[in-house]
Length: 466
Ligand code: GDG
Image 1: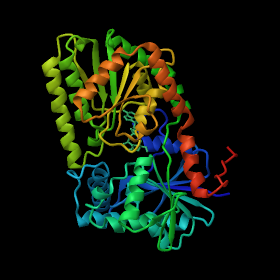
Image 2 (image 1 turned 180 degrees about the vertical axis):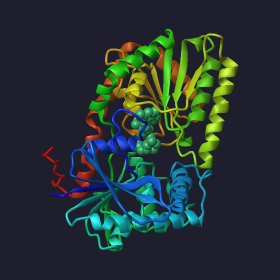
Image 3 (image 1 turned 90 degrees about the horizontal axis):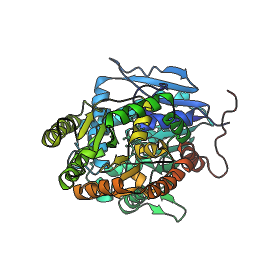
Image 4 (image 1 turned 60 degrees about the horizontal axis):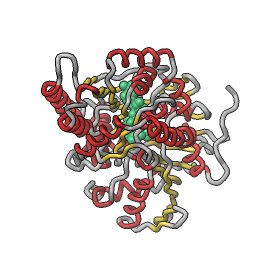
């Protein structure tokens, strides 16, 4: 029986119901629990000198294996190339992308260190599944170390248009390393097609009708597999005592007003500034509705070591302060801006109490918040999802009210439309959206990808023993 070896930058041991975890972590624990195997990555800790010593842990059915990195590694690989170069560029923010050879060298060095460390753990029948933009060259490095296993790579963020990617120094070299994998996955057709465009136009690869890409002696299959959430778990979370209590607390504090909710890591890709401006447009254009609503924005800080994140934080503090200063009354504040994370059950209760879920990233690989919002709703009286058409999720969630997040007017119109939406239409849209969230959940996503990775009819067998 094949084991599944998952490799990603960070590894999170299950945290029960507390602590803010990224969408990736939540998705993985659900998938990994079903399989024998290992989840490998950086511990998040620093060491004076990299030794490659692995720390194994087993918790709630998930085995993790982590290594510590040197400070310089983290600066160049994680804060540098991953989060100052690739993240902004792949989210179409070339204005924020920093190109430094030191970052590129550090990224390569850490990927080699990971390859050296994990290589001895990989057994002949294991299937290796590498995650995300931190680890693009890892498969290539494993092949260089004699690894002939089936290997897949999944990109959780958008794949940028060809011309944009060309601005990355050594882009071709980086993309070529991806061809070391057997399968490459994206969330949407749009990202998949942008990848196909780059490899055919800029690298001279050939693309077959069945999705196989050939370049030199390499053949790789590129697929679109949209990630989902652990829907059943989230529906239950929304009905838990904690969620009910939170729901009550929100309704009490709303005092009859409709709540609009946003939940995002504090990241410029999430379009928070544009969201606040769109909401302000609504306040200006509809003074009669002003005090009937409020916006709760939950935004736990992330990547605080990166300057562009420090800047967006300051900008949002200013903007929310300005809007509140301009429009608040003695008994009403338009924006509740909260810079902290909440346990998932609390989050589920907040979603359920919100009449509108406002999910307006400027670019997003998928966006799990949109799916969580839908899963948390009361089927008898669901809220309305307003979703950016630039989120990967928009490809599936066509029954949401789709908006262009750059247009404050469109956002304002969407809020008006959502507030006025008759119950029957809310239920109809929610039912269609919930159908998708239920059918294409995180287990479906894992199957979608591993089926391609294992080849026809050879899905990984679930571990039957407890
Ligand atoms: C990347 C891609 C893709 C947020 N605040 C709290 C909290 N969260 C949780 C949410 C959700 C997750 O974080 C965010 O997931 P997203 O998908 O929205 O965004 P990224 O973190 O940017 O994830 C994205 C994803 O990878 C998966 O492939 O969808 O496009 O950018 O689950 O609930 N969780 C808790 N408290 C908070 O305050 N507990």
